[in-house]
Length: 113
Length: 114
Image (cartoon, rainbow over all chains, first blue to last red; front, side, top):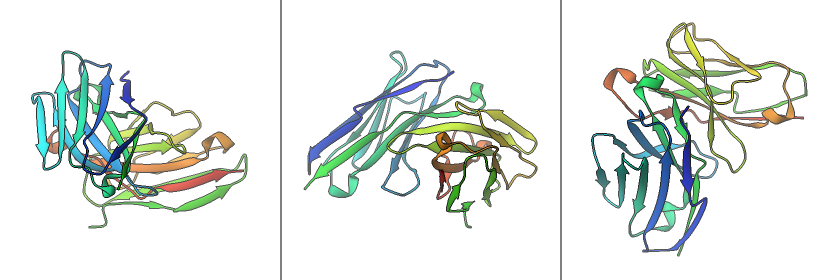
């Protein structure tokens, strides 16, 4: 089955700097890659997603890139703000696996004012 | 639209007890999922369902059972609770009818087994 790895597990950046989180997946059939943000004590919420027919997607300060050949995808946050502090999860999903959504272990991002 | 709701919010069980975690969604989503999240860890898929009457195992199904008799409800049953099942449980739903799409999560149930 699908296995998703995520690095780093913790990340501290100064406010205004960029943050990059990287994920790899094992199932070449995976074709949907969402990113979720989870604040302390809250439920995960989608911040951006990308499909396998797209190499890059951007939404304001957040961007995601996908390299299907290497089976990895990355989240980029620019101009970080204290409210970006949270745990970020990547995930992978495949229609051929009945849409099981498998999550990475998460990255705890701290933005230092 | 309430989205995905879960009950109870918190529960303490004794070892060997059983309970059912309730999950309901009012978005007419066909896909539903149960995850557990251990402290400081990621989300592990327990069971999922692609429609009423159809369920399948995820990554960590042992010790759990599910049923899906309606589109709206997807209860998770714990039999013979063990301390290893102490976790936060999230239910999620997704509308596959529009293609690959986001999951909407419920607020979670925090379960402690003592």
